[in-house]
Image (cartoon, rainbow, N blue to C red; front, side, top):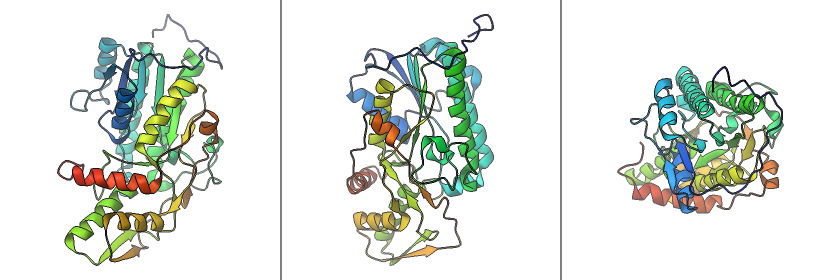
Length: 332
């Protein structure tokens, strides 16, 4: 992309979705993370033969020159942008500068390098936290930009909104057939089980597991337990990503979820059962609850022909089994 190329200013993209060539080079940015590793497994299982990934020690995505050099050397045909700095309420609320700055730099570098090297298909992965705190439930894609964000993760949300706008701008100015997907709360193998940096579900798995190991009779969780959350297994998310790449094209982000939610109390009880914890559960109401409810409207995704397959109980049991199998190596 140079000044002499000139922009292609258009509201329409001349692209018809269809099966991706299994011999095409696909770069999965963030291929070691929760989402990226699931997408890598999915693509491998679907017969993709030229997958490309780099760890953060091999390629620092906040280093603009390094990212451009990588794209010029490898020339991927398709890109899945799953790399991000992520964390739970405490991490987001404590380090808003880092969550905003690092994510904006990662996204901008990858998307700009993809523009320069003429990547055909790019899928940007965001988060359901982009929607207003008090958005009508279930949340449709049209709710974006209609209200105030949840303050505990507003910096991360703004970074993801910037990514959506970057994709839309690339479509409008350069005619790129690039898309964005907004997943709900994800969980599964490869998750971060840190007591301070993880999201609610893996944090609860670790908390109840350690309570069983220690013989504790009481577990204390943050907040009131009344907020409602939707949980999607990461393998379902990976399946949805490939489906969107092959069946959807449009400027608007697509919600990815199950279409149903549970209270935090419900999920805590389910995890206690899965881990074998039989003690009491208490709630520290001095800690923040976050958004009261965050249920995605997934009718756009259903219209594109995809629905979630892995039930919550099945997903929790398989995730806990993975946690036990990888107790020595999970991110803690």
